[in-house]
View (cartoon, one colour):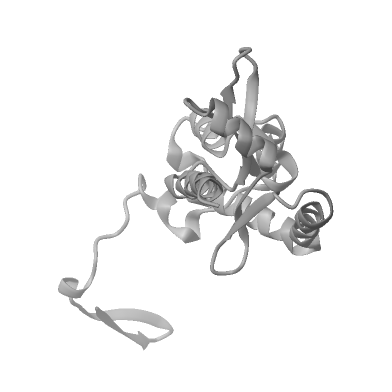
Length: 209
């Protein structure tokens, strides 16, 4: 806490109580302050290029941190990069693409395959965080060859900054067999938990019908 007075066009400090003041941020930690963080235009172009090439968000941030020599010289932190991708996803889905996807799934279920199943995962702002879908054939294949399953998020849908996450296994001929597929907004524990909870819940529901 401090007090000052204006005397002859100059400010004079008349009282200072350090007890009610916190320590100043060190130069090594100043880049964590929101006022000191910004993704520059040139950095945005590099991020988009790497993302279009299939690099994950974590890989992009790690690479740029190394190139900057020290994290404090990068100009932004990991959460800023993640928030940027989140805003891009929200922008794309606000254009009606999510409704198009929902309409497509409904059409597939009502007109082509009544056993087609899909599920959407959204946040508090009704923004899509995950999608899962499968049909009767995929569920049948899982019942036959689902002793071991494989899960990979190396595939990316570039326009929406979402991960394509197929759940697959191996059939009796040694061929890769698809059991279901998801779209996720990231490789977080929460996202993967939702995907597998939805996947196994649908398999359980199928067995109990």
